[in-house]
Length: 258
Image 1 (cartoon, one colour):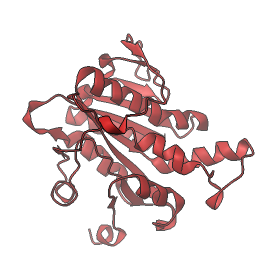
Image 2 (cartoon, rainbow, N blue to C red; image 1 turned 60 degrees about the vertical axis):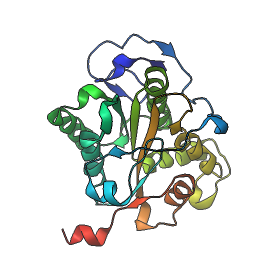
Image 3 (cartoon, helix red, strand yellow; image 1 turned 45 degrees about the vertical axis):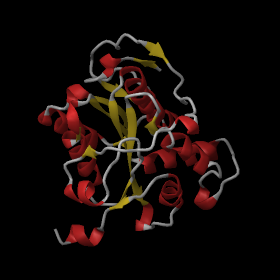
Image 4 (spheres, helix red, strand yellow; image 1 turned 120 degrees about the horizontal axis):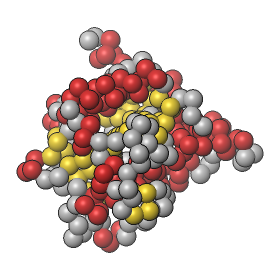
């Protein structure tokens, strides 16, 4: 992927190609989307927080720079609206440089159009890079979307010293695409038909969050996933819970109470 600071303010497709009618940004570097493994001895302890503007998160389960904090949702709950709200409201204290990389996977038209309208209305599009994989886009592209987004986030963090919040929604769509591609390749299925290597595959995404000793920037992840059948033990939330540090679980009962 060709990456550049001029990607800020741009809307791209799932492969990082322009989707806003503007020519592609001139690349400062071309990086492999699989990323580079971060030496564990060079990892800096996550500290300082990113203010989301959501009191239940900021006060009870604070989002720390360099952390990976997923949101577990259920069908019909406003996880997409919450993700858009966090993108619009997120900020860091102290005047440090901050950016958001937003990746939507398998988003229907009404949903991704609502995302863009919310970002424009809040005036945050100029500090945001948007990767949009639509519901009718190829499944194989869906597998590349979070990797392209995180490659962009790593470049902004490591090359430009920015604190980057990567919002990935919906990881359930990603995992469904992973299962469909694995079945098409006639691989041996694991639990509920998902490939046995899904844990490793998710780890290659989630573990790209962090801070490097001696570098000013950071990559913080906020993945959003929908639990099928509201089941916390389903393979997608189950494996995501093992890899990430704590989870925010949306409550259907609280939502029904308004």
